[in-house]
Image 1 (cartoon, rainbow, N blue to C red):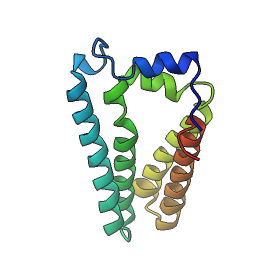
Image 2 (image 1 turned 180 degrees about the vertical axis):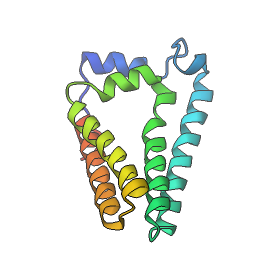
Image 3 (image 1 turned 120 degrees about the vertical axis):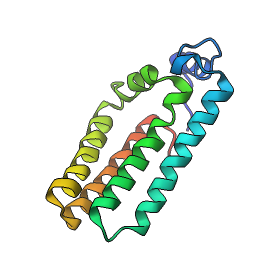
Image 4 (image 1 turned 60 degrees about the vertical axis):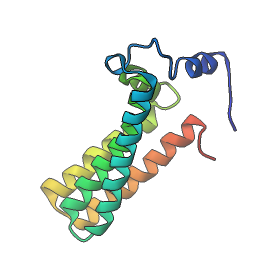
Length: 141
């Protein structure tokens, strides 16, 4: 389930390194708090989106921004540069591009087209792309 090679061991050691320059040289504690706050904010937005499910614009905005916040919360832990490098790694590049594409498509369907069905389909595809992304990391299943 957990594969630890030389490259991943180096990455794990530098994940929360005090000397790293990620996010304006925040301390480890500050980065953990910021990541937790970002993740919690994302989860709250995704939960609130379920309340306004019948209104596609509000639903898509809340769900998509909550989803992006939750995914982006790890940037506080490892830094945005390393996260982008990992997201566009050869193993995850297709899943990342498809996820970003469906995020944009969901917003387009909600804001410009204003179709409940298309927005819902784009959100379902966004969730599937996110699951595929996490499966590519080896952290799920």
